Image 1 (spheres, protein in one colour):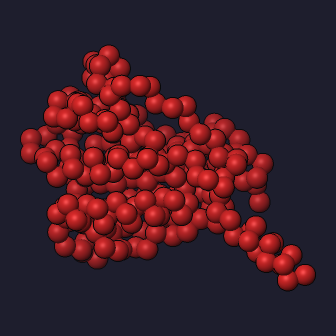
Image 2: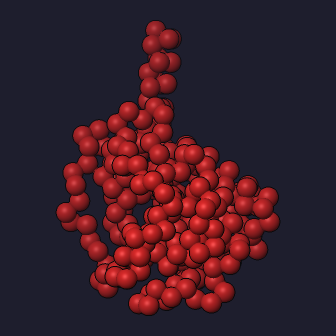
Length: 248
Ligand SMILES: [Zn+2]
């Protein structure tokens, strides 16, 4: 009886990412503490600071590595809601507790209380032209991207194409550069995506990234077309149905 109860407890407490990054949920996720060595969570009122334990460990580890590298503290924005699933606004993914947004703006001192809910966005890109604003993408931002992309559990980092082009110019041969995937938006932050964790049999992985550093034709087409974010905020009425296990 005791064993059965323990097994049951064990089974219910197992953290799981279920479904796809843009159509799934999170079971038994955990909260990222709102601040810790080397980071602070911003806009915590939104309650989007939950993730699979793999993501929480990753973020804490990243913050301690960036601190060791001499960078200021990180601003960590949206992860997932406590049980994952689609946000009502903002992004399509972030549903399984494996995605996190990290700002390029870093802080030498804790964010002021009054700024916590709406910290000043610190854009690196001029949107229509895709021009990188002078002085905004410096050695610290490159170090941050490098430390964020290197761990094996990171499958992709979504980044503005103009910033990918900067990395391609400065450091094209580093093996993590291929993980940087150009995407629309992302003027002031990048988005880290982790692979499906062990013990999440219903997590749907994404196709592997193409080989190479991605600095060639694909990036050139983004820079040529300069796709823009839609002016009106997108509502996600046509989201794919969630997996059965996410109901209830
Ligand atoms: Zn994101």
